[in-house]
Image (cartoon, rainbow, N blue to C red; front, top):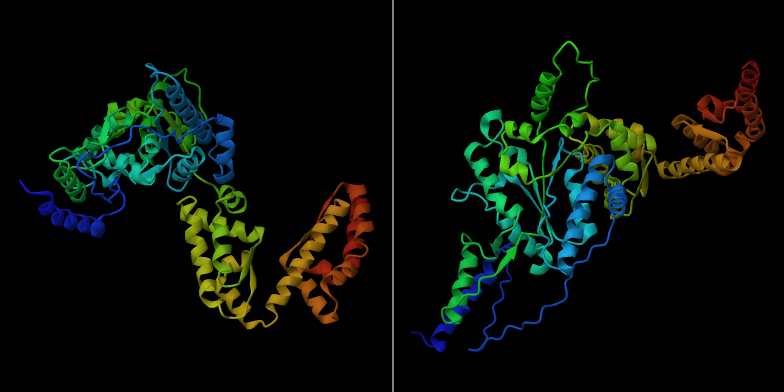
Length: 511
């Protein structure tokens, strides 16, 4: 038997190996101390770091700040999250509640509609670690690939080794529809079926060892502990009872199954015609039988009692994401240009043009990043160091970025023109605020105002005041005659304001 003096070099070499090669996500802390022969583990447990006292409405209001559309999905998730974590709180206060069924969630819907972002925002709100993984990276135990238990070990890593906090975490598994059997021609056959089976115990309650049997570094650490403890190894585990599982997938062929079932039930002379269902309405009507026919295992589907479908995003939704969401990609572009000392401003028509192009990508909100990079990448490359300190992203820039970039770089007074254009828009906004009458300045009207200010040598505010000096009286008269409160101002109005006003007044009496 080796003496302690003889074993120290081995211990040192193994410790050096672990420090040099340990990868993040192994589920344990690599540093190993060398305790004396009588190692003492304190029995006092620290106070629980987890607390939850939110209502479903509060959860949804938080999600509304970041995720546009998907109201039904947000309500369903809010209720499921509150049910789950209020049950966790109840169990912390008293003995285990025997009749509770965990509210694991299945989210269905096309790519880019906000499924992952919803779960991420939930985890941040609740204050628990979250692990996200694609189901396709896992295989049945014994085959090459990831072990589903690694998801639980990764929670401990996300919680920075805090096992107690990790046991309240959220595991989000995307692309579970790819685990379907090959009956639909889209699945992974035996391997995918095996992964579903392996997930069953995790989704209910089981003990997962923090050291993986297939991980070399984990086993080396266990060997070191075995050597220094005289043949004894402490087996650490984490219980999955309070870990919430949220899984998602596109299930692109599932609507066909649901429609086929519904059409069979509606056949008959007495069947009343039904309006055409939207794709999300069809998915919302999916039953366990439909999912099993799709290729999912009945036991796996049975452990997902909460199900909801997300709807595809339209142009208006994508525009709202850019303009209203706190997680808008626009903030990222503002920061990127600010790093070079450049201020970028986005107009509404520019944002809507980005949204239209993104909708054509048919990848949901991900299309916003694709289009944004395609449009703004030339500006990121050319403008830093050019002397340009600010520019505006409007519709013509989005539709013709290269031409607009050349104009910006060649026009020595571009920045001054830009500021003057913004002052003109501010004048219109103050006019509306003061008189409750809207001046909708078209881009060519703004350009005409800027040109006029340059030619006359006036500052922009004085120039606008002169051009629109009779508009307060004239527009109030028109509004009284016709009820009109919004007026489009184009270049022709700026070039001849008196003639335009006379024509509008006459027309208001004719009405």
